[in-house]
Length: 473
Image (cartoon, rainbow, N blue to C red; front, side):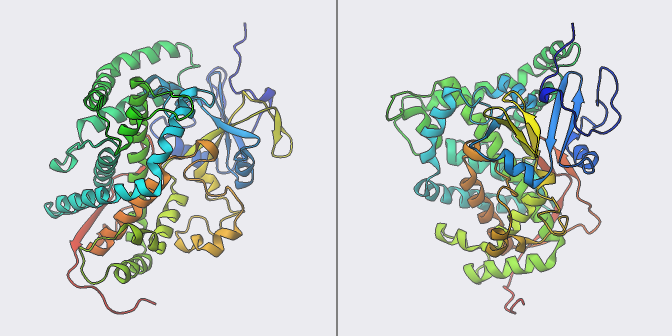
C-alpha cells in the first residue's frame, strides 16, 4: 500500500532544492535549528512557487507578491493550518490562532473580543503601557554595561500584555532572567512546532508522544498557572480587561459563553502572539536605528518636537499616532524581518493560481513573508533599510497585499492596534530618554523561536541630559 502524500496538489511538482532522496525527500536541506532562515536562502532562486518534501508531507511555498495577492483574496481563499500549527493544537486548542475556520469557538471568541480593541479600550491600556515602559527604564538604569535588547523587550511586552489583558504581574523587572512561565510556555510551544515536522515520518507519532511526555511538566505548569488565574477571577463581574470580557460576556444573540478551557486557550494565544511578535518588532527596529544614524536622528527630532525638552516626558494617547516617522521605522523593520515569518492559505473551492496551478480545498501554500516583502518586482533595493518606503504616497503606489506582517483577511491579527500602539509608544519614549549605541562589530544574528528575533543584540543606553536644538535637515 502506497502512503498518500499530504498536500499533494493533484500530483503537480514544483521546483525544490534538488537534493531529494527516496523516502526522506528533502530532509536535511534545512537545519532543524533554523529551518526558516535556511528556507530564505535555498528558496531564493526557485521562482515564485516551490516545494519541500519531508517523508510523506509536502510543503508548498509562495515567494512573490503577485501570488501572495491571489492567496489573500478572501473571496477565493481562507486561512489554512499547516502541520506545525496543527501540532500546536495539542497545546493551544481552538484558540484564535490555532482554531479551524469552521470551529464555533473561533467565531464566538472573535465576536466577544472585538470590543477589547476599540479606541476606548486602547485608551484604558495606554497608562499601563506607560507604567511598564517606566519600569523597564528603571531596570536599565540599575544595570551596568550594555543591555540585552531582545531579552529586555520580551520582559516589557510580556508584562504589558499580561497586565493590560489579564491584570497579572509576572514580576519580570525584579530579576535578570525571564519569568519561569515564559520559558515553560516557549519550550512547550517549541515542542509543538517540532512535532509538526514529524507527523508523517516513520515512527513520527511515537516520537511525538515521547516529546509530549518529556514536556509534560512544562505544559502542566503553564496550564495550572492559567487555570488558577481564571479561577481567581471567576464570579467577578469586572470587565475592565480581556479576561473579564471572556468570563462575563455572553453572545448578544445566542447567549453562548466561552468555556474555562477555551478561555485558557485564548489567554495562551494572546500571551504568545502578543508578546513574542511585538518584542521582535521592537528589537529589529532598534537594531536598524542603531545602524542608521540618519534615521535615528530624524526619529529623535520628531519625538523632541512632540514631547519637548523634558527627556522623561511621556506621550498622551492622542500623541502616539503623531509619531509618523517612528511608525515608518517600525514598518520598515517588519518588512525586512517580519516576526511572524509566514502564514498558510487554502482555496474555498477548486481553483487555479499563478496562471494554471490547480489547487483544491485540501491543498495549502505558505506565503513566505521574508521573500514577499523583498520581492524586487515591488521593492526597489529590497535589502536596504529605508523607512520612507512607507510614506503615504509610496504606499499608494504598491500593489495590494505586498506587505502583510499581521496576516490577512478575517483571521488577521485581532490585536494589531494594541501591538502597533505599544511599539510606537515604547520607541518614542526610549529615543527621547536615551542615547543608544550598538557594538559596531555586531552582525545581525536572527534566532528562530516561535517568531524571529535578533540574538545577542546589545545596546549601550545613556540617559540624555539636554535636547539637541539644531534642526535636522
